Length: 249
Image 1 (cartoon, rainbow, N blue to C red):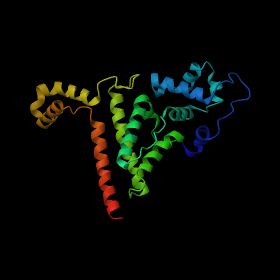
Image 2: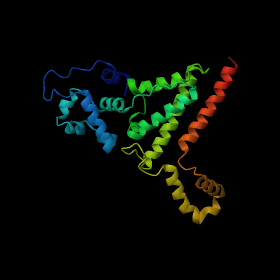
Image 3: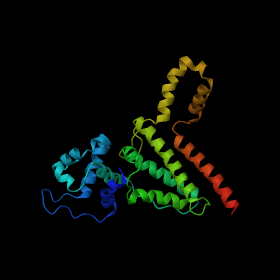
Image 4: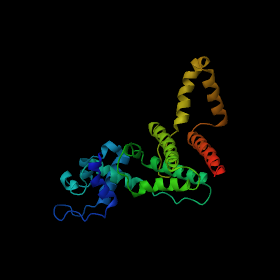
């Protein structure tokens, strides 16, 4: 989407709610209803399934009727992202590190609930208030840590990238979130270990370091800890930088 094409999405996400068309069928259509329908389809069928035609059919209207409210698929997806993003939880009082841990886990929970968000939130695009609120909360946690604005932004991108990587692995492994919020399948680390175990039984002598790592993980319960390990190491690195900056202040 080019800058010239951003206007409709900006108006839909940031402008006052449109009154809807003055004439035409199904005047009861609303952006909220259209957004909910798109999210429900994407949750069940993936982002590709949430076409304008499919959403119109779900709402029992023609595609032309839908176009009176939403100009096209890009704007529909922008509305869906905004509607599916959970509200960013208020930052707890406490050290910046604890606040970022809460932030990262909250972001992962949202991506687990709506895995298609991974596909919908890439590239240069218009972001709505809820999505920007996530960025705001993370940057606010780093306020006063001695980082430059660019460094703080890069830190947030680094954390978000780790969270997205975990969510991508879970999505590829078919691991979702059940009605009660729990995992619906074995995690990607455990699945990988199970697959590698089959190979290592006959070819393990060629890969002694890998065999030792797998054995240790099995013994000490180290599977599916990638989120915690990566999050801890990223925050450790940031803590070193923050300590260096604040010590020199």
